[in-house]
Image (cartoon, rainbow, N blue to C red):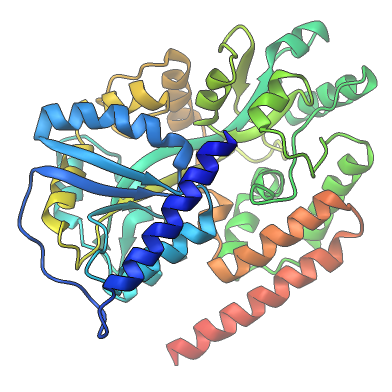
Length: 426
């Protein structure tokens, strides 16, 4: 695993250097070479998924004569820097993974990504994608990029631990809290946490599960992080911290391995996490399972479930622009999404695709029928605020205490960001 990380890091370094050598002084690259078949260079920040993309490439080669040449990055910051640098060169990517929300808008505002409105119109007309998903890819009435994936943020649990402690899937928040208390009393740490990157899921769950409007207000600046209602929620989190309900925030062990070896009983993660558990040697239904986390506030009906959807984009000035757009159109099809579900073991966004995992198929149906979706905190929060928030939630996890100083630092970043937005609009 370490050797893979070093290899990817080396690739990233070499790639950045290569781009620097080919950079154009005035910005922007050449026009597309017009090819719609061939080898498509694909860059992604999901290095661990590279084998899945290689598997998918076999299907795309067969279906539309497009082979993926995938380069994966394991360092998110290095990846973002590489992509942004590439737009100044004649090597801007024909296909790359990115983020929705403010990160995508920044690229669109600079005319750096290709518009995909026609692809979306056709896919919706063919019933390949939900109209609801389009809003995450719409800026000023036009669509950009296509969905790489869709993932619901749910709770995975070690089934053996649950069985040993006489626990079943909780259906209410009170049941979940009682399960946590039982586990702790029996010497088992209930929940996973970390101090780096994925520091936000429990905050996301507590706020969205308490008041979805409050949660959405944080992303628009209509609600302050220092709002008494947010402080109260953080104090609930602090109380759980003081009860010892969370794993060592500083652990560097793979969270899938941690769940397998019983370092904790549960982990709040995206529905793609099952593939990591499978890779760790666990079997769904026998060693692990998952459930939709019940609403904190029983008055929240339907329950709020965080959804993550990551884009596949094509650079507007890429020499492989036409090839990237041809792949994007195929990617929306049932054949592509069936192949992706088979390769990745994830929920496909295309309702006409065949879902390899029956439990995930049922999850997708039940969420669509019974719950309301809220955008994952990572995408919903403007980048300058998110950067500070991830640091502060990580610091809170590492050294829990009075939540107000942590929230104040996030609010300071929010005040600066929204002030700039107001200035830009004047």
